[in-house]
Image (tube, rainbow, N blue to C red; front, side, top):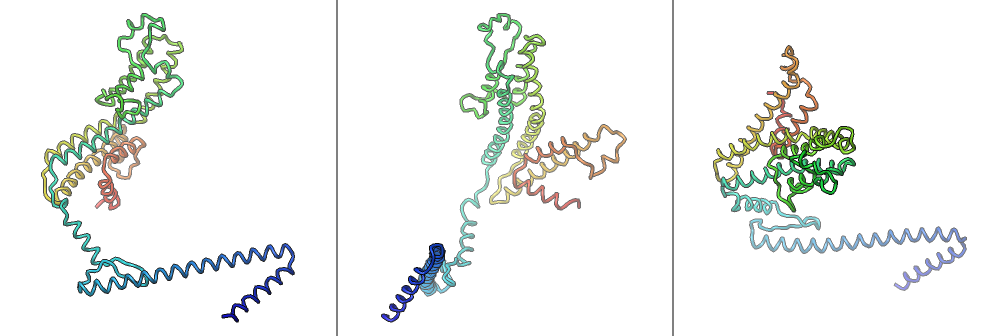
Length: 348
């Protein structure tokens, strides 16, 4: 040992003498090289330590496996070790799956009440989405530079226009619309929603601009601002297609009520599959009829073009594609997957 230590010391002394004969730049470069070598050595030491720790764990796992196998004799051990890595036995995974399948929830029948509750929850989500789109339009209008005269009810006393209530019998403003909508976000945090349909929301906004035209003469500042805002609203309302979405929602709700009336509770997953299959067929029929209707609408102006009506490869207009997208948006994720499968299969 002393000889080896002496040899190491000689090497260090030799390196020190060599370093002293180098220039400052060469010594700086040599230091960097030594630091790199030192880091490599540290990494190698850490890797050896990790391997030693894994080997110890593997030995313990093998002992547990042996003792468990000796007691059971039927391969009941949960863990076993291979090459220092702990693995889960396959038969243990299978037993876990069986226990999950034989759970209490799998054998419970789905009642009509639970089916109705799930239906109403999903319906509320869809309808709230429509109210949210109404709220978005209202906020965009309010933020417009021409909207400030319509933010709140007309204060005809302070404005010194005493004839206003005699001319405008049904006043309306954006704040009142927001209150009837359930707030500017339509989430009913502070006020309850008074509107029963988005069409009532549309009519109230149009009433604001109708009142503006009724009282303010052509060319006046408020009239110009009101007309500009009215045009903006009509464009946004048309692009949103909220009316079409609401009409389809009402039609879909009728189908839901029919499905609920014909719903028969059954044990296990069979009833659920039967139910979703019935909904799928009705929705697919609705989509097919909507597709054919849209094709006829897009080509209906050409009475002599029966060839175009029979052409399955006829190109759909942008409006047709948008309506089809709305229809598909009413389907759940599982039903959308089925639709994609049908499309991929193509015609029989």
